[in-house]
Image (cartoon, rainbow, N blue to C red; front, top):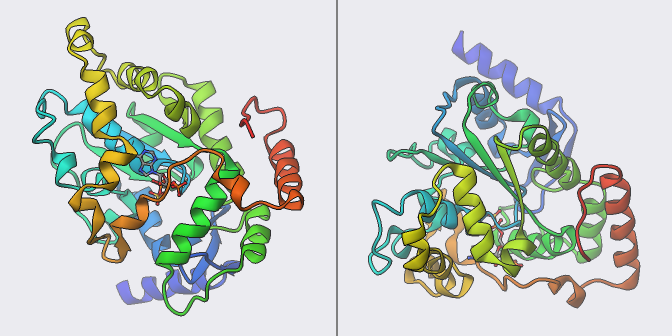
Length: 314
Ligand code: PPS
């Protein structure tokens, strides 16, 4: 019976529209997003089986938008009573993706459920496809978005390095065309952002929508905002003792990139940790985009985000 069910599931997956991925060989158009083939069953399990607790915190993002950074900050903010020493902190010996595992990979069996509370989870699954229990619980969701120009460049570089056999390297023009059509792991990027954006407006106490660029510009201010949203506000004493600045420093790109734990080794059985840290610059896209690409992507952003109130500085 179980075998028969698995067979039906495989048949269903194979019947879905399919495209090549950037890093994962096949993407299937599943529940209106391009789901990596290796995670479809896992997303299904997540939807069905995940039992959210009101105290859970979900760090959500489109890939290459600042996930690693937000995971580190969230872990440091909510666990600061247990790990008040910044000289001997778990973030110095573990990668942020190990401390805040992605639910999709938990269901793949690559990592364990977090054991400390509040439980912190990462996810790239779009808002409408999150588990029913998350929708029905009061758990908090923080979402990080990024200028789609820089996300494109970051994704090109990352997926080019981690790509699984038998994928060939995507040429820039090919990748750009796919990106403009929303074809990329967990894409389209516009509907991904809009799903969380709309929910953050409808339920501001439940979803906090952040931008990578705002964090870059004033990390202290954003960290304070995240802590308040999550129900872990900083006390005056903590502020006087520069706890916010210490967290920002601990999670900074320069600090994290140069840690031994992030320079080698893999997570989720196949992703090299060093590739999560590249340049972390704003407007790096200017080094790659032709005037044609700039105009085309600007138009798509304008068209797709039109009327939503969401915009990005280019
Ligand atoms: S992933 O694969 O979705 O988890 O990748 P993600 O972390 O979302 O995005 C990777 C980009 O974020 C940069 N990065 C950081 N920026 C600021 N601070 C910290 N601590 C940090 N850690 C990673 C990383 O360099 C990627 O951006 P690019 O532009 O490629 O450098």
